[in-house]
Amino acid sequence: MWIFALAYVPSEAIWILTLALTGLLVASLCEDKSMEVSNYSVVGKPAASFISVLLIVLALIGSVAFAYFVTVKACLQRLLSKGSETL
Image 1: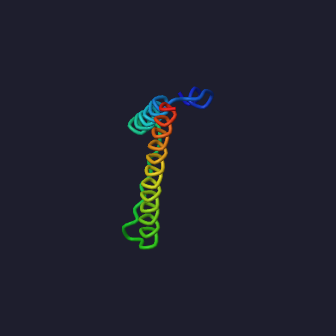
Image 2: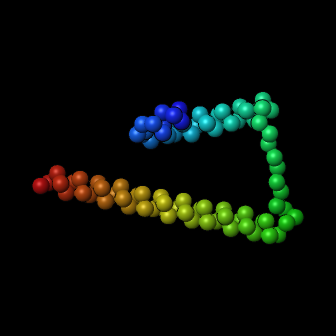
Image 3: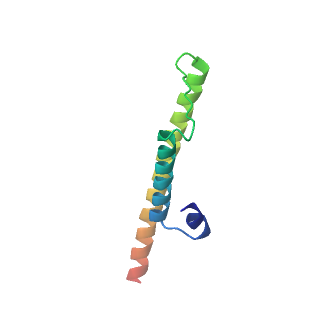
């Protein structure tokens, strides 16, 4: 799937299927103990806890900003297509 997704111009459905199948592959490898899983706890480490919370907040802000800009772009594209149809 990854070769197909990188070699051709994939649609959103191909990207979603590629990521979903990759997740299933990683999950099955972890379940079969073919891939090692390591655990890291930040409960007793204030600096690591602060950094992890900061990164999560930044990722959340980035995701919301990305969703906003994609929504604005889609709305503007729809308005542009309606305006060109009326001409």
